[in-house]
Length: 282
Image (cartoon, rainbow, N blue to C red; front, side):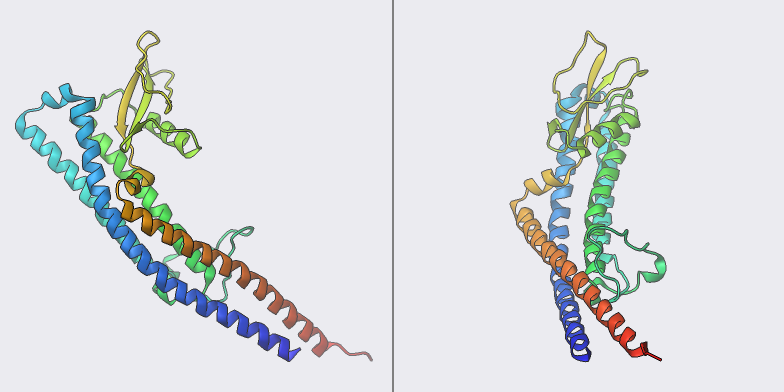
């Protein structure tokens, strides 16, 4: 029994060491990816605002004075730079090392993360679960930042009367939710076409039609909606990094499943040993 326990312990140690190696690799890969993504994000954001102002609503943009246009452009640049900073800040996410916490790919929910356990750099972790969860936080963070920056840009364009004021925030949220549920998105180039009821009493968002419908009182409005896929598509080098990240995440997933299996076997072996140690017949 001691031999079996030692063997399983060595297997766990090997898996933890492999996790540590994967942590170093994927942290370095995300650093390259996010820095490249950051540059493309800025360019695509500026392009989207340019298209809104000059292709979709040129008359509204021309209604602004020269100084107003200049101020609007500076404000949009500031929003983009803030988005860049937030993206880079994702690389500072740190989790406490916990080699006793196994990866829960399926089943139980992960334990909550608190300020107290955000202490050690992810490169030091030996827990497959912690590393996998770190990757999830990075990916979720990127999407959340793009959505936040999109909303800020649309609000700013509305304040300057570029975007029509009849675009309530809930309509855009409905369109975004529809896309997240798998419906196709119209517009392209990080833009989103939304159909809005003219009376605003029965708001409806559709993301699979291009035309403006007049007789039914429905107006098409185009807004900014930054998307990871389109930003990656604009720069093939980012797609290369993305594929390498996917491969590493798959390796982490596989190591995690093996770690769960071995950890369970180790617990069973410990319990069997404890049973034999304490069992006796009177």
